[in-house]
Image (cartoon, rainbow, N blue to C red; front, top):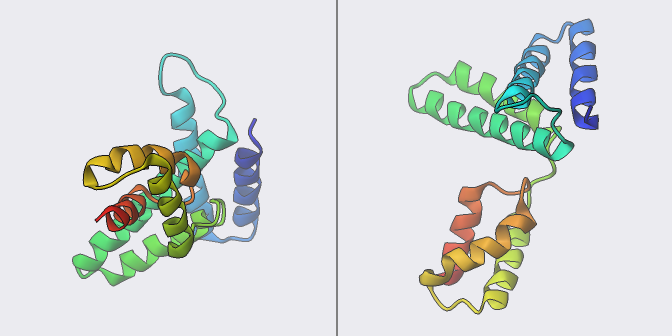
Length: 150
């Protein structure tokens, strides 16, 4: 079993003992998604830490999008709950790259690819994505590449 999954389970147990309902429900939903990912496909298998991180990242993104949707609908209390759940999930994710760090990686990739314009965006993205995986959302990366090329 992956170390990260073990940590999630241990933290769930601790949250239940501490009667922290929000943390417990967030971790329970996340562990359910991890289990669903394990049994998806032809055969059941254990996920590696990297795969568990992908599930966590996807769950955190869902929370961010839901919070935005609730804000637009005027449901501030639900948006706050979604943000709180996102903060709990963020504890398990690698720290996100700052805008300056991301821009530096993109600049180096543009130089490496010899990119001259927007037509080379795919080449640059191919170089940048493996370097920032899990540490920057795809939309942020694409925006940084567009800004550098444009």
